[in-house]
Image 1 (cartoon, rainbow, N blue to C red):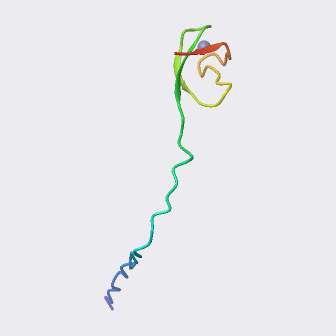
Image 2 (tube, rainbow, N blue to C red):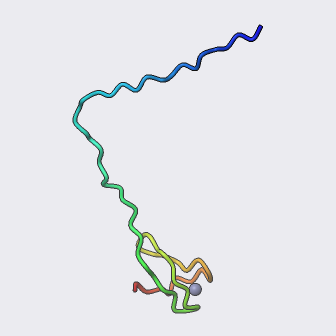
Length: 61
Ligand SMILES: [Zn+2]
């Protein structure tokens, strides 16, 4: 009774290798403004739409 199981600490094997972390997929967000309602939002992609009125009549600020 009352047997305490020791938490197995996951061993972090720090291998001294080269870092191959590529950050090519960076999130690109641009500031857009909607012509219809004047909403400012962060848009991604080529055809951002206004999150407020769903209009695609937006321009990049
Ligand atoms: Zn809008």
